[in-house]
Amino acid sequence: MFKLLELQRHAMLMYTSCGWFFDELSGIETVQVIQYAARVIQLAKEIFGEDCEPAFLERLEKAKSNIPEHGDGRVIYQKFVKPAMIDWHKAAAHYAISSVFQEFSKATRVFSFTFEDEHREFHVTGKTKLAVGRVRITSEITQEVEVLSYGILYMGEHNLIGGVCKFASPEAEAAAAKEISDVYQTADFTQVIRLVDRHFGSPSYTLKSLFKDEQRRILDDIVASAREDLESRFRLITERYAPLMKFLESAGAPLPGGLQMAWDLTLRGDIRRQLSNGHTDLEHLKALLQEAQPRGTDVLNVDISYAARNRMERLMQKIAEKPEDVNQIKELQEIASLIMPLPIGLNLAEVQNTYWHLKQTALPEFQRRAFAGDAAAQQSLSELLALGERLGFASQALELAQGQ
Image 1 (tube, helix red, strand yellow):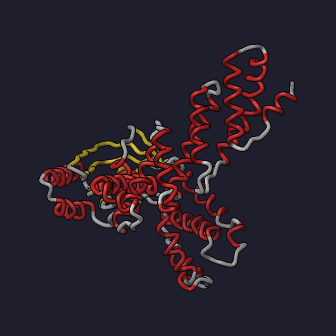
Image 2: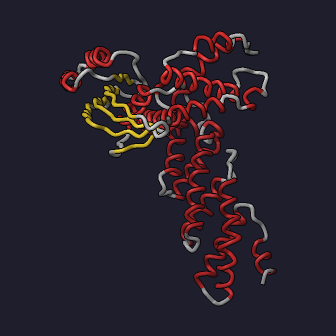
Image 3: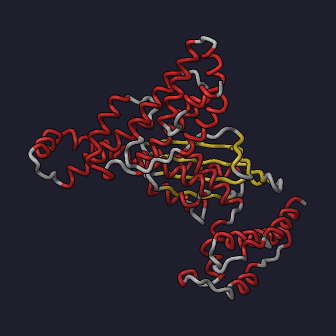
């Protein structure tokens, strides 16, 4: 019943009119509508045993794209719609791959699925990881339940391969898991890959098999790890040749390109770390920024802008939660005074919006207490007004005085 209702829901969604308002078939609106239709086809095949996809594609290919590389509706379906379709095996693969990078609770909800491990083995050797197990999956939409087994081998960076299947018996699953785990312990990863392929069959799953949001999060973590490795290596180069670079700079001689790049990357990493670690050494940050300014966008780029914005937003949120904390107000003032003059395209919309709300709520109360002789309130009020002026809120002291 639930599956039939889900089919009907998508049958209505596929007629969403905004999908056909535009003159390009590969636009996000039209592709989304085709995805609704694809879900109808998928469910109809499961419920009625009838595959409507071939006939649907025959009609769809008559619709031509204005973009040559997209061809027609059939090409667009195969390129954008088919890969986005989720079945039980893809859902299990997503969970299994994600579980290599983060620890899940006993029952984990991912989008419209709930996952519960019935059995799991996890091994780590150096950067490599192996996960072999069996997971129970429940669709929260159709209330269906499926149990599938998985084997995932992660070899560092972006290198990952895995498979999902349903074994004929618990004994067959246990034998496969033991064989794969035993070979993994010998660090014969080539043979592990062969065993995963043999026992779990095709298709093979990789990081590209993850749902997009989770894929981006994991790739960000991998890139962050790679960046830290690069920065540590470039730091060694910078420290080794720092005296030579300073001498060349004082003599007006150009630095070799490789040394300059190492210096810039190390400097940018130090600034970003000061803004991101939650414990900013303001004097050190000031010195780093002074060193970076002559290098312009080679150091002070969008990464620095992003890190600065996030740091200021976090501080502003803490101030909103505890506006009497003078130390945090002063810290945000000092960071703002260092960062805001830099030509880094800083977006302070969220910081300013939070301050505006604080101005309407906390500042009048501090003003009332300050006029009643509360010294602590007077100090908080003074610091908040100074912060507002630093953020572009002018003449607030006059406004508050006129309100009395």
